Image 1 (cartoon, rainbow, N blue to C red):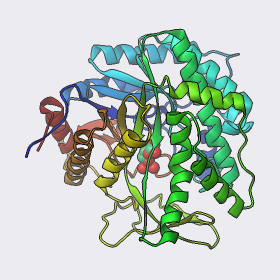
Image 2: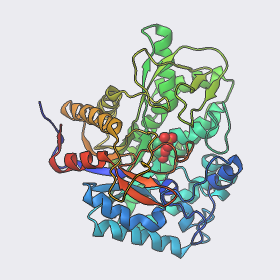
Image 3: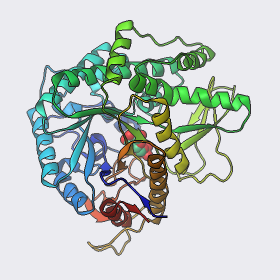
Length: 474
Ligand code: BGP
């Protein structure tokens, strides 16, 4: 049977400012948490990335040609306010985003604009990042400024993947400041992001600008490794850690008692204190959940969790050396893949059912949510330009097409089962800089030869165009 997407389903491509723009020192941009950290680490530089700061019009022209109807971009906060706070405004940054949105209009592409995609201005990072009240207030001020300044934007996203930022900053140590095993800080940062998100949603709705506002969440579907009660409980703990506190906070407007008790169990096991929240904050969360227009789901892979009571140990595979990642968290569980689960070179499982299940979970458990978009999905591959490449060379990426076909089938299944999925954004539009993997993990529909910044079309772009035009999955 031919699988079909709904007629008004939006086909998009995703990006994030720091991963595509490059030009990190241009036009008065302020430093972010990554600049000095990456320089010190010495593995790779965020410049030139995909040089989107200069090449946006070329990329949007390509997007239009290959059926991309919408793009996710983020505003680099420190291009607008170099210090993060509103005391200093950088007009060249403001001008850049006006030009970018005008180019979107010219190419008939709808921008979905994220306000924070992992790029906290350095000055705010240094005083505690998501743990600092000054950061939260400054983020709300910056958001309100953007809402007034960019009326051409009709779809806003408050924060990209609050949980993955909090966990990578404070538990796995792969994001600056690179702390490990501080579950207390991760949960507090998650709650604080829930609050900042809610304050912004409520402010936006008060401004009556007529657009839509949502949030984007990294949702790894979590399954128990076996049917044993211990593994089942470990999977619940992992789910509370990675997904549930945030889902509850933003989509239900309150934390369920089960969520709170799972969080407390993790913190107790690690001898760490519970996160703090106030009644006023909880009211803000409740109000925002009732006004939210959509949730974005970033789903690439699923996890299987086994009970574990040893010390925490995490090893990040940031090079594509298959089979090297380790995640064992004290008080939560250990990640183990069942036999027969296919993985990428970066150990991410390929499991389309996880996409179906997470979309259904939002539909079933969070009935306040009016609409869902898949805001990131795709596969990172090692790809290179053939040595005899000419301008017209097309990069062959059958693995990506196969991955997309399977994940789209799962999305269509979820839509047929009742999930209100309105659109899909492939990660990524073009090859980009990856936070912890540099330039070797390519996701794009368009290949970027980073030294020359020349673009080459991949076969998956043709596949995507056809799906975008016909809405029929072959
Ligand atoms: C998501 C982020 C993106 C992007 C993507 C791929 O979590 O929102 O910014 O990086 O994952 O991840 P990676 O670059 O680690 O492969």
